[in-house]
Structure formats: structure tokens, C-alpha cells
Amino acid sequence: MNFKRFLAIIISCVMIAPLFSAEITASIRSFAADSADIIESGECVDIMWSLDSEGTLCISGTGTTEYLYIPISEDRVEKVVIGNGITDIKSYLFSDYLHLTSVELSDSVTKIGKKAFLGCQSLKSINISNSLASIGDNAFSGCVNLTTINIPNSLTYIGNEALNDTSWFKAKQEESSLVIINGILIDGTACSGNVDIPDSVTTIGSNAFSSCTRIETISIPDSVTSIGDFAFINCTGLKSITLPEGISSIGNAAFLGCTSLSAISLPDSVVSLGGGAFGYCTSLSEVRLSDNCVNGNYYEWRENGNIRLVRVRNENDLYLHIAENGKITRLTWSEIQSMRSNGYLRSYGYLD
Image (cartoon, rainbow, N blue to C red; front, side, top):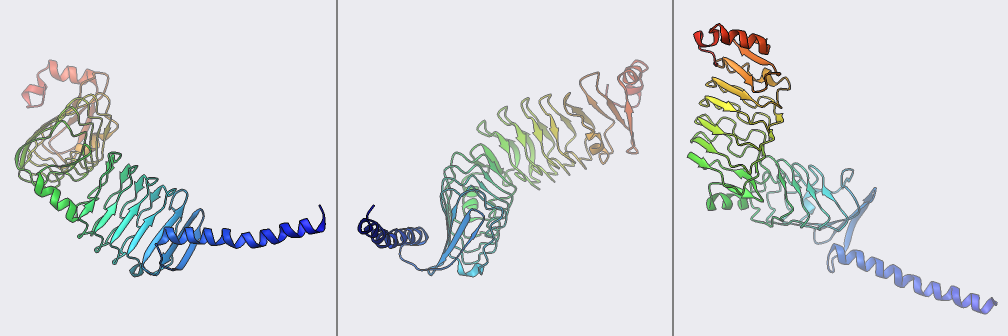
């Protein structure tokens, strides 16, 4: 290569380089805001953020926001735009952004963490991604002016009271006493008397009927496979509930404090029984446990002084005798058989 050709190549590179640089800069600014100036920016692991002069905070890159830290004052942000490649919104990421009014999520976002938008009282709309699968506990607590939420079909989990403070949720309550999103029953606190849950429901969410003292009976369809934490906590008027075959899990304190509930039978499909699921159900006198679900949970019945016998169907499993003083005695199958044969269970009012 002669010297003149080499010099020509060098000059060409020098002339073209600014064009690429300008193109990249323009692209970033276009992503941030149409014509606003970027006034602050930063980078954390594979995530980049920028704030423009109009209060738009843009987050771009790839992967999780787990380690993202944005060292700016929350009151400077009015809009959040999450770019393609970001997979989640970590817990508390935008909590107390008091001037935030709108949020746009790209389709790569699959999860919103707990309390992610806690206290964003000016938030009015959120454009949720078409791939979102999970919204964490209290994700939008305090977002009292949030009226517009598009719920994608991909959403399969809604955490405890994730949407309950929003204007959107209040409007849903006015439409129906049962608020159901993608098969998840997230609220039934306006119900009373006898409640029939429709076949479209697959999950009864956390706190769905919390402290709803007016309901008396619940009819749960075969389509339901899980009951969330605190789902029926302190439903003091609930007298009867039939759990269909097909339910696999009952959450922590799901029926805690249901003081009018007199009997419960867990189907064989139940493999997970949460702590205190039937705690302080003081009217319970009969409990039948699933073959598959003992797991030491007999301790959860100690507060229910009226229970005379907790039993399972499979004669190879333990039977548990609970005396009136609340003390638990493990009884083997042979001991139960002996008690049956000598009439002890009938004579003392225990179950046969």
C-alpha cells in the first residue's frame, strides 16, 4: 500500500467517525425523549439509565434490575420508560416517586417486585408488557390515582393486595363483587351470604376474602387449584366450605380466625398446608386431613380447643387425638382400632 492510499483511508475514518458517534447519541436521546436533553445518566452492571430535562427516566440494557441503583432525587421523575432487554422491576425500585405519572414497560419485563411502585400517589397509568407474569405483594400500594392498567393474558400471579389501593381496582369492585383477573380471584370482600365462585377461577388470591364477616358458605369449583395466604382470614361468619378434589395448596393462615367454621375435609390432592391455615377456628370439631399432607402440621390445630380428633384417611398414617385441654397425643392406627372396638370414641363424643 502506497503512502497516499494509506493517508486517504486515515482521513476517511476520521471524517466518518463523528457520524457514527452522532448517530449513537441521537439514538440514545430518542429513546430517552424526543428532543429533551439528557441531564444525568449512569450505568450499573449491564443496566444504563438516563434522566432528561422533561423528567423522563429511561432504563436500558439487559437482564435484571436487582443491583440497579439510581442516585437521583425521586421528585425529579415524572415518567419511567423501561427498554427492551430489561427482565424485571425489582422490589421498591420506584417506591415514593411522588411526581411519577406514567410508566411504560417493554415486552421483555416479566416480573414486577413487591412494593415496586409503593406510594406513587401521582401515578395515573401504566402500560404493562405483554409478557408480564408476576406482580408482587403491595406492588402498587398507595397508588390511589392509578386508573389505567392494561392486564396481559400472560399474568399468572398477583401478590397480596398488589392493586387494591388503585382507582382501577375500585372500579372493578363496582363492576362485580368478585374481582377476577386471568383466573385469579383477587377480591371478594363485598360478598355476603352464600358465595358461588365461578368455574373461570383457578386461584383464590392472598387476602381475597380477608375479614369478610358477612359470608356464610363458599362453593369452590373443581377448577381451583390453590388458596393463597390469608385468603379467608377472620371470616367469622363462615360456617361451611367444601374444598374440591384438585386443590393442591392452602396458604399460610388461609382460614385463621374463622370462628364459625365447624368442620373441614381436605381432599387427597392437597400436598401443601400452610402454617396456621386453620388456627383459632374455635368451632371446629371435625377435621379430615389428606393422605398426602400431614407434615407435622398437627401442631396447627392446638388453638382449636373443640377438636376431638384430627384424622387422616390412610390407616398407615398417624391419627391425632386432641383432648379438651389442648394437649396432643399421637395415636397409632392400632390404638384407634382399639378405641373404636371398646366404644371409647362414641362414649366420650369423639369421632368414629
